[in-house]
Length: 194
Image (cartoon, rainbow, N blue to C red; front, top):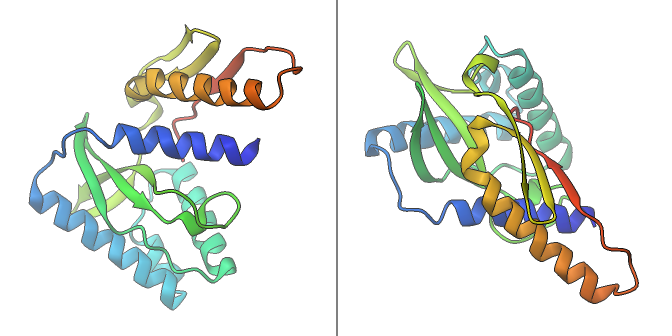
């Protein structure tokens, strides 16, 4: 079931990336160059170079990025997260959909293409990985779509309906495979931090 949920989230993000590409080419090339520097830092085991690509003012982001670095190094897999699929603006940030590396997914195995939604901004003329502050996330929201109840922040409004459809489709597959299982609703909570 955990693998199914991981595939569901990957599918939801992949489907959301099917929208027309946006963003300036200079932003795309700058962000892809930043992502390549991060991949190179991981390959060299250069934690200082990797940390220099992350917004130092975001404590939770620093922690999760350090965990990403450590996990990638422990698995011995160099990240391939260097290709930007789509760019858009969110407040004062550039939000990018980055092709993720299936080797870094939950079970460490290859799988369908997946995408990670990441936030960037320029600091002193250089792109860095960042994330919106709590005040910039918008309010917390709760919405029911069919059998699926979703709790999320406004920053993820664009994902809610798509995610609800994918959860419902996954539930339908489970019901087909296990028809004697009781029918239950789902609560999905999207956390706005990495």
